[in-house]
Length: 439
Length: 139
Image 1 (spheres, chains in turn blue, red):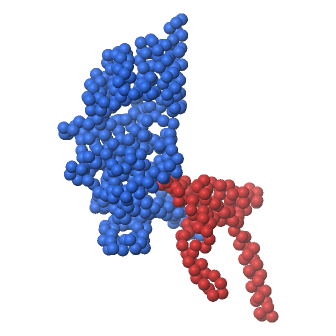
Image 2 (tube, helix red, strand yellow; image 1 turned 135 degrees about the vertical axis):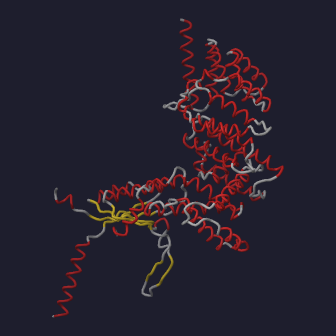
Image 3 (cartoon, chains in turn orange, brown; image 1 turned 60 degrees about the vertical axis):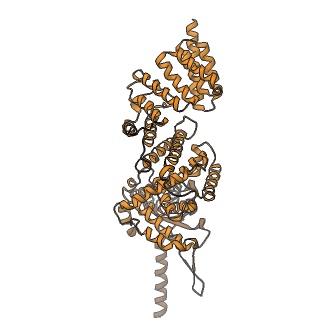
């Protein structure tokens, strides 16, 4: 026994290092796309099952044998073998069997040192087709994001549930419903072309943005998974930029926007998990590599006449990233970008963000006026951030009583513990300032 | 060094619970692979584990006077053995402590700890038996 184990032990030493971060999840996402191309979009579940089985085989053997030299190729080869078994076994594939097998012949063998370019293209195209299918307009936004996370990013229903603050069962149900809808509505597994491409690409970008924001918004959800959502949205957007169908200025704009915001994630929270305001953040924690990549995408986004909200938001985020400190922020430019953004998208949330820029350029009172004009025009009265902003601006004017009233109102309206503790802290500080002022 | 501490006994850790991996996400699977491999490597480096192997799920069962050959599975799949470690440790407690470190436990794995019967006494009995046979035959 000990003899037969020795070569294994030697081969296994240091093998764990071959398991790069997220290797299984990323390979699973790729393989589901490729297998969907083989089984058909109606058999999405079958593709998922075959991929899962491949991972499980690795789990049964790798702990003893060590990680193979090329783990991704091992998983691909295993998935290929399992897929071939399915195709031979299932009657529904009989008609197409020879052509399916012929196409699978092109898959790289396990012995190959690296993937063949042809197969890499197949993976890339498969992922884009699946992306367009998952983000098809007949599916609800909720279904789209859940499906994208399940099939393209290989998160489990339990993990998706954690990110969306819902149960595993609710997500599983949503996924089943979405897959049924794909079958019922005959959603194609293809990259749209011609006039349709632009419209469908907008849908994909919107879903990726939604996915990103789901991860970005400060919340009581699982911190790590939320950060991964942001990174996945960026990964998928980058994948789009690498394909002629997705390589559009607006795709670059969205990618830049997400990169700038994600770069600032490490600075948003202190070591106790408290939210930090932009002016309090330690800018040395911002991810400079992401910012640099964001700047590249931002310049690529300017290559046409396209001007989308993504462009303007990316430009605003770039201003923040480029400023050495809070005082050095170019608020004038940010305000003019918000003015343009408001023309494209008149949402009250954007108007509220613009009001902050107004306050930084024209003073706190001008900011308060801007917020109050939003209140008169829209239904933003139950949005906690509106009162949090008013509270901050009133403090700057030493209107402590007004500030206290606004912070209290904001506190009433938010349910997230991280935001509650931030607002309580601000409320306490303001109360103290108010006492000192009286004294 | 006292003689008791140098006495080693052998144990097999048998890993059951082959369905425990079904509900795992790819990220969890990767974590269990890494943890399990590190565990196995560590035990081998410490000289406490002489080796181990995974077992394939499928196989044959040979039984009865008719030498009937049937396909597996041999038991409920959740009870089938998925692999084993061969341990050489001080005592049963140490084997149990090692079994408790199995990374699959929190996902439903079951580890069976079985002492390997003392080979020396077996051999002794076999030798005694053959000597007796020889004596009878040559009597």
